[in-house]
Length: 168
Figure 1 (cartoon, rainbow, N blue to C red):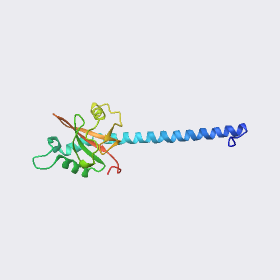
Figure 2: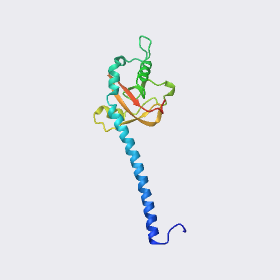
Figure 3: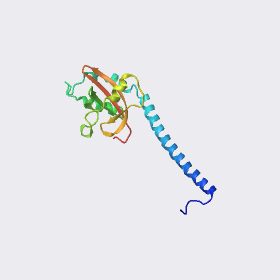
Figure 4: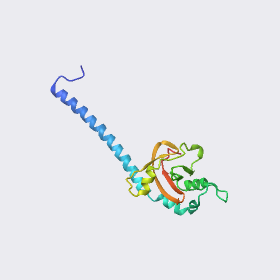
């Protein structure tokens, strides 16, 4: 092997260079990972009560029906809320994770149900943020969220999935 130095000093220098490169790559990966986790945690902590706040500003969601008596659709109400609150998509979710209504165009929704594990943890009070849920628009993407109980009989949740500009 011609590229390996023959002297002991040369070999030690090469080992130090390789060792330093490994440390730099490990540090870069760790910094990116912890920064991302910190960002998700900070975002979700800040957004903790957003879904409850939206629900308090739109009490008509507590009287959920698929088609309302005045002809307006619950999805249309959610779409109006999404226009008022950019950067989030809103879903009404039943106790089994089924999506009852959504602010997004139904043709864009690729998952009709959500895993309720994170949503259940949200309401247990032991919030080890960040809690993530699969985005029904992009099921391979995990996103932070805020949630509120709309009503208890039958149980319905308002789920506010926070996202960036890549979802639009």
